[in-house]
Image 1 (tube, rainbow over the protein chains, first blue to last red):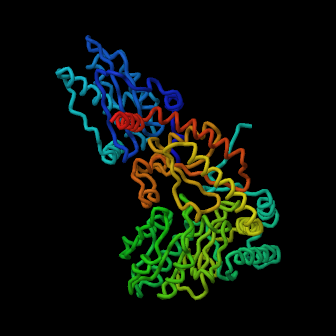
Image 2: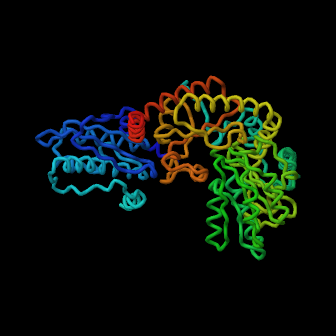
Length: 153
Length: 398
């Protein structure tokens, strides 16, 4: 059975009309996660102002409908948030905002969360600051393992 | 009515109206169980006997060598498990290829758990099995060789006659999964030395739920479903009379129109291939350029992923399928595309279009135009394409 038929209307909307697709010339932070082997790569660009507020977010994604939609939603969710708040945008938040994901697509939301973290990490490194709670991102997450972990929940 | 261009005929086909008309009376009027004794049922039994003759003729077999099943997967399961069981005292080794349908591969994995050994032959970049490599893989304990007639994903037609000849030279049974080839290309079980052959009704404009296993007379194979005496006691279960009669009608139409249909499909297939390869950069054709099913095309578009492509094609009314992991429910891309040597990231961007005799030149042109837009759109979103373009620019500067 195809998972496509299990996509919510909201997810389809974010796939068909993705928000914030693009690149940034001089981003405050940029992160790329996933790997082409597994079929998903997300790159997130953040423009962060002097008050540490995310002014702009852009993304590019190689992946399935869910991967594109979770990236799109993740950029929407971090915009206007402080870096500390952006760090709190979890994969669950992305999933809920899309009215859920088919079980085999949950890894896409994990990737979106990782993409935010990777961009924030880059920002922190460039500015030589520490964002409390931010760990160095794994930019090559073991999808199979994460997938089964999520399935088991 | 919304636009629909159906280019997934390797998945299933439309039941032809003539086929449906043939089947109808056997649901509501001639519904007798062909195994019963009275004349009302005997009439059905007679029609089935004629239908079986018609089907057997298509592959130069005898009617008593045709065993009806529920479809291709069951036939594949029966051939492998049935021979493995019947010949277990003789040997425990099976040879197959890496690009078989899952009905073969997963059955082989099951048999491996039962103690059988399986050699999965590599294929070349076009998906062809090398008969010399196959011959080398033969051991004294080899009991069965199973190689598909034509691949369901990339359409490559295997050197079946050559493989059959090798199998028979060594006294080993040869089974072929001909689900995609049956009714599409000429098959002769005698000339090609085929001992067992799987076929399915719904791939040739027949109904779903009916298939067959051809078993050469004298082949040692265990019975598959135990119960009544149907299919000469080898595969029990009430005879699917409407299915068989529909299947038979589809076979006679396919047989009659084979040349005409092949010519039509080949012309459109080649138009699709030529236009895609010349008009969409970084695209490739998977499978053999000439030695392929007349209705099959399979492309990879670099830097994009198959499922996204399929959804956008669907929005334009085009039905196709993909070897992308995301459409299969697993996380790996198509085993066939990996076996022909494609890296994972390229295999994820594959799409298969399979034509029918009803496909028109207009359909093909509309598909190409849609593809061009969709590929461009997805590439504009792809970080892989972004990196590629940047690298290209750099190399131009230097």
